[in-house]
Image (cartoon, each protein chain N blue to C red):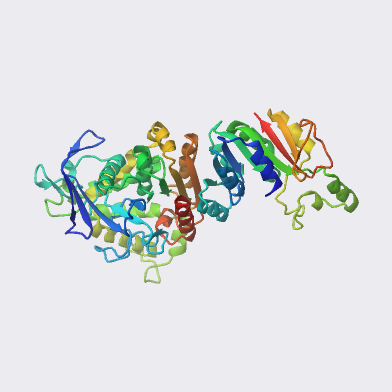
Length: 374
Length: 197
């Protein structure tokens, strides 16, 4: 039994599932709930649906105003009426990922078996598990073939996983700032972030929610580390240089002297308000485990017979998911004989470019989507 | 339609997998796609041209010919096409070796530097510029055509790399040469080679 209800806590919808969800780890989850939001209208033959996959700290509100933060959605520049992903033409679906903290089953939700918050008892999940849950949602919406699945960063991982797992349900794939697998350097950054959280005394072995506290310092340092990897040397230099923060002289102490310090601390602090620390652990782990090449090769017949078209986009200054990784995706797709396009956008704004006002990214994506229709 | 495109469309049988290297805005790819069951892939360095290809539903990888072919798997394409490009790359010999791995058949066209008008101009005017290309903006110091070659030059290299020369065409005249293996013809301005590995 599955049912879709209006989401009371957050605007949008919740799909409630009754069946047991078996995970890659061998463990299972009961009564999974998927929080999602839609934009635009599904046409009569259900051929205009685009699934948008969010990145590590995203949510199911890419477009319009985010009802929780009251700020613009994380991909509002990309999605909306008349924009690249035009909601007057396409029906856009975006769900909070499994393990997330904005309404979909995750470590900060109640375990129906114990009636207690999951915390660290939540099973380890993978990108494939996240996609499995998205497929349930798409099936429930009775959409046989998605026009496209689009995502950047961790969203790109889900996108590639879709091609590997459910090629029969796709017409195209758009991978932005992504990779076939998480690199050793990226796993290292994730580990530094996780250690920062877990070494915070307020983490309480993952039970902080039931003990009414939060590992705020740990999570904010994790965010600071990660945020550095999202920008670039040039972006930092351009934004801050060595400018001092509201002072003329150095303090000769460890207070904030430089603007860049103030900025990073602000990024860390504001993140704590909107994100769950355990969710951060589970989702970074899912990214670490991601390595999709073999599955794509295994499923190549179906990828080719379904004539899935791939678009792979990278950015020149992205050192977290550099162009080299995107070239790896293109090379693999070529080797299995699939239909692949790629482009490298010139930008000095690092990995974050995929979320920013990058005119060429919009132009390339618009062109590709137009080509699918024709 | 450009003469070289006409010749290429005649050469490529239906059901082929084709890689067009330096595909520009995809004119040739679109023509090939109309043929039965031809699967095409393009490579182009200019992003605006890549976007035009995408809008027309073509599959195109953005990249520099000097590097990108190394990313392509071996023996993946029935035909690799390189029109008016070989003379612009850093190392034509290395490119030919890579092409030999990537494709089963290779179609290459370029301007013959031994064309009598060019040779005459060079002899009389004493300037290298006229040898380099059609465009008047091309001068020896700024031209993209950094490796001009004659039909004979190319024939020697193609054989050295291990290609079999199946056919050669005079593009401007839209004519196939009777003796494909020795077409050192000073009356041919633009030549097209159909090679196999």
